[in-house]
Picture 1 (spheres, rainbow, N blue to C red):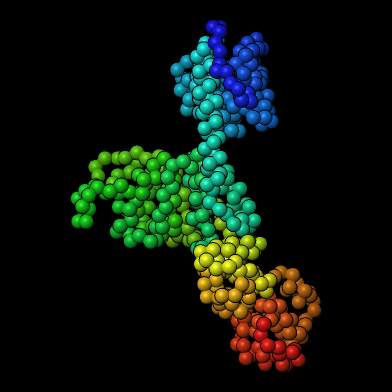
Picture 2: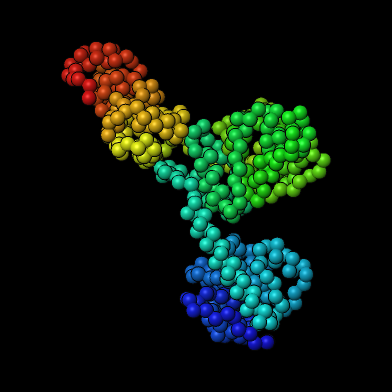
Length: 464
């Protein structure tokens, strides 16, 4: 082999992993690498190579195409699955164009014939390591720009699914959850974690655009395509090229447009309104809906074939009432946010007010909680948010399971007056003694509550 020197370096050595079943080749390339200031790591097979990658930082891999009985292409696939940013340079003593094409398709950084010319190898390895540095630096920037997820303890399973989905740059994701549960924020979080993070994310609410305009909004139009088309206009699909297109409320899309979207998903091509030629696009689709799409399919309101294309990675986004543990951090975050926006001193949530928030059903989910906190911070000047500051119309949530268990013992019937008293005391406790709020939670008037307090010989104190 012709002798060549990698670039000398003054910082901590980069690690080069040499995977070859020939010990002599591993030794010679390893000596060359160490002479040039690299940390040379060796593996004679695929499993050993994977162990090295899992256990320590590797900046580039030299991988033989033929590892005894092992297929280097299969090892390449496994290495890429382990770390997609790791550059792998394939080596072969009997390479063909077909091998090179296949290796490149699977993400190989380069393809060289054995024994490699070391001058050329030095250039390729230097480029590969620079590629790794830039890729990891970009990944770091992506993590820094991740959308803030406050109160995400109850979203752990959802985030795990999205983390896996983010590894693919093409798999279509369908977010399913109630209105206001945070599907848009999670779509942005997914995009920021994906290989497409450096490209645009374009969003469209399908229910916010009239059907007559939605096609032009999505695909753009040529000048003169219709009466108001005074000039050429790009659509959102084209603007999202290389990135992510988020289609919120996909269940509201008209059947004719569903067919066009299916065509885009299947062919990665589209035509502008009034256009005569296909335009290729590289875009990942993330869709969201609060509708029951399988039911819509059964009722003929949504195309079954489109549903299957969208439902590659289905992700359930739980309602706020399903993750009560997230209410406190979310509420505190919103209080701090709106106090800062209004230029007022920070306020705190009284424990009774927080208990009242946790007891609510929140049909509007996180969006409703946010709106309630904004209203309170805007209208109330106190530094402490108490139960009486909360709007009386908040829907109460279901009683905690342990409460019903303690109130109703199997085989035992308690007097109605005793059950009523327990319910009143529980409501007053949740509402911090506020009778107006407690009455609303119980579904009775304040006067009725006062009457029942007297009936049960409870002291009728002034409101807190």
